[in-house]
Amino acid sequence: MREYDLIIKGGTVVTASDIFRSDVAIKDGIIVALGQDITGDRANIINAENKYVFPGGIDVHTHLEMPFGGTVSSDDFETGTVAAACGGTTTIIDFAMQAKGQSLQQAAETWHKKADGKAVIDYGFHIAITDMNDDILNEMPKAIKNGYPSFKLFMTYDGLKVNDDVLLKSLIMAKENGGLICVHAENYYIIDYLIKKIL
Image: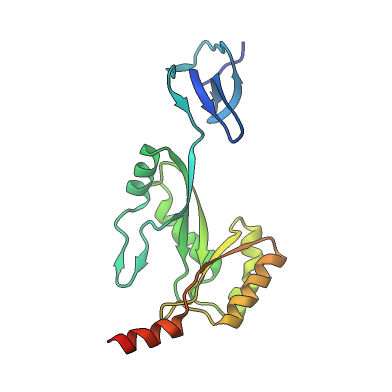
């Protein structure tokens, strides 16, 4: 008999392709078996009869403990991930905001310090590039290799926005190295014109 840490018994399991009644056996935080009448001597048992058993959700766009516009978002990595877990989200991907003068690696390290010891679920980072220059552009392939394959660039907000040529260079760099660019897409100049006109 295999030993499991946890067995979820008799639930209706929902996967990406199927819905079926099954037990779920977990060892060291990993699902290791699906089937009927799974047993284990030392396993904790959860009775899931008449309940659905879903995989954990992934929220790919969070802003925890993020400074912006002279304030900081109200949830930190503890309160935000506890709330996420209560709703069934088991992984988040937060935006690590690069400070002026920081490398991409330094931005990631800053966000790890915010999350380490606080987060109660799994997490990863998109790196939001706010101080783009040739050195940062050339650092993108290394960041991708180090496990940060997605970046955010802004087309608006003074002090954050990049010009179209920089955006294009970033898109090409990401594509050539297996990365992804998230874009906060607005036309800064038209918005600026319309704000001034309306005011």
